[in-house]
Image 1 (cartoon, rainbow, N blue to C red):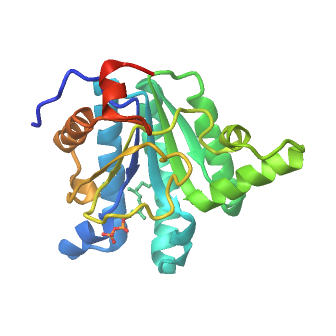
Image 2 (image 1 turned 90 degrees about the horizontal axis):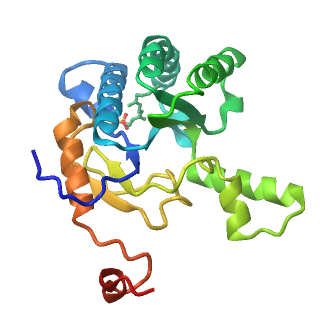
Length: 240
Ligand code: FPP
């Protein structure tokens, strides 16, 4: 296990859960079996975040571009979302997890939208961890919908107004973004919110990403110096 420094753990971790397909293919299983294992890995990650005092976890479960995957995989992911709600929500409720679904949910069936709204409502009083599940989400969609909201309200389009209209306005920006599966790109995830986020890329496939891998990512984060555009001297001497 990587040594954890005494610096505060990231309060908001975002994850691109990549590598489910490869995990399944290596085992001669259909890709959906990898996504199913991905749900188990997500559940383990939620628990590890709670145990480490992380306040917000935001995960990329289905991107705006994932509709272009083979029909069988798309419907498999839709079914998995419904099954996961039934299987995981009671546990999340008991563990103090508050669920939010983030994205253009209007494209989902009415039945699915109702299921997501019910899951959000039934966990709304929980305060230990906020879990944002990004579904039919794209960073460009998010910026465009925020701009539309601000424009139609008649306010000037300022950074602050856009920030308040973004889909993740209920949480601070991520401190740490983890991408598993060895790819080094953002893939239209949180384009607006990651302006000063620290990035960590893991070669582990998402189903293999365990608590030790999370600790390693947190340890790397704790050893980074976040400067937010300032100089190192300003940060270390606390001079503004
Ligand atoms: C990327 O791996 C992963 C996804 C597109 C889906 C992520 C979904 C989960 C982890 C399950 C949780 C989802 C729900 C429905 C709650 P990939 O398929 O691109 O993997 P590859 O790069 O190995 O092909």
